[in-house]
Every structure is written in C-alpha cells, then in structure tokens.
Length: 108
Image (cartoon, rainbow, N blue to C red; front, side):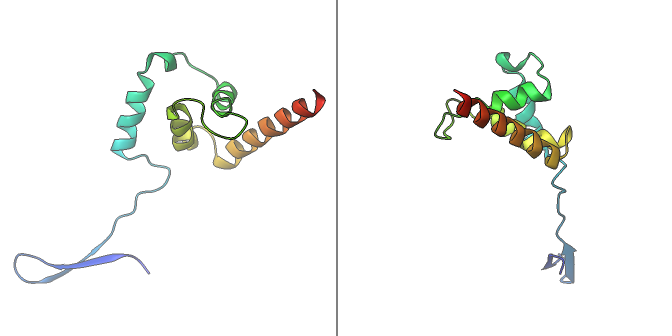
C-alpha cells in the first residue's frame, strides 16, 4: 500500500497525509547544490565527452578496486548519469571498457 501518516491538526481533527516520494531521476535541491559546487572545482571546468568521463572514472580505481583519490568525479557521474544516458546504456559502456581492459591485459 501507499505510505501514509496520520496526525491531529490544531482543531483536533484526524488528518491523513500521503508521504510524497521523489522520483529517482529528479535530483533534490541538495544534490543540485552539491553538483554545482563540484563543477566549480578548477580541474573539472574542461568539458569531457561521455566516453572520456567514463574512462576518467574507471581510472580513478587501482587494480584492487580501491579509489586512488577523491571519489567526487565517480560519485557525481554515478549520481547524475541518468540526466544524459539511460542506466542500461551507461552499464553497457562500462562493460565494454572492462572487456577492452581485460583483453589488453591478456595480450600483454
């Protein structure tokens, strides 16, 4: 069922209020503010195309899967990718990068 909250108003009447749910594709004001702050960081002022951004995110991890440095680029990309590309396509692009890297490693 739908999530509802009951409370009594100042007149003593019972009020049922349906809890509003934010759609996953709509960023909250806090998320928008965070993104604006991150985008003002000097090293991020140069635009990257999607493939370059994905590569930058992948390169943020070492061979053990740990982040090498700040995770802001990775966090923002994961949080906001749906603004420009469907999640299935995003995942497909990451899988292609992984396969290409695995193939390169085998050929060395």
